[in-house]
Image (tube, rainbow, N blue to C red; front, top):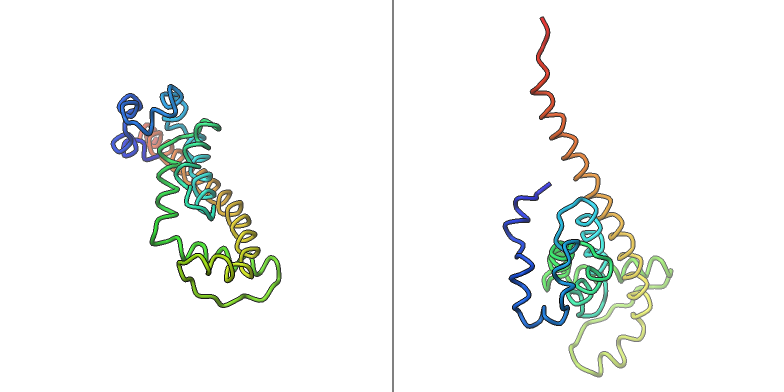
Length: 176
């Protein structure tokens, strides 16, 4: 797939060991499984990154690193996917969509609310919307994680098959 592009933008594991936040992970950060560009490691990391994007706490990147270390899937892909999906510009529409999904799943009427970043809002105005929001985040995380994994898996396989057909079509000579 985009192996050459990923090799260009992904830092080498040995260069990361010198940075202080990475030193917390110790030698596990140099695990070759975290940096491999094999189909399974990349597609699982992509699906997990999309699913992590629906976690409603500001711990996406930390959670992505922990999941990559535990499951030994591609660290740059899960980290990058989490950042691309759950960036400050897409977070509000993403969470609003998750809330609407939760409203539909729980079959409750949607509450109209306005976000005010102060402590009183979190104490009082969050109460009627937290359950549909949490359920929607869970449903969306599972559904979009699986859809993301499956979509990238199918695209990867299609790309490999088309390259194989193209390469072997050149070797076949027409018989006249």
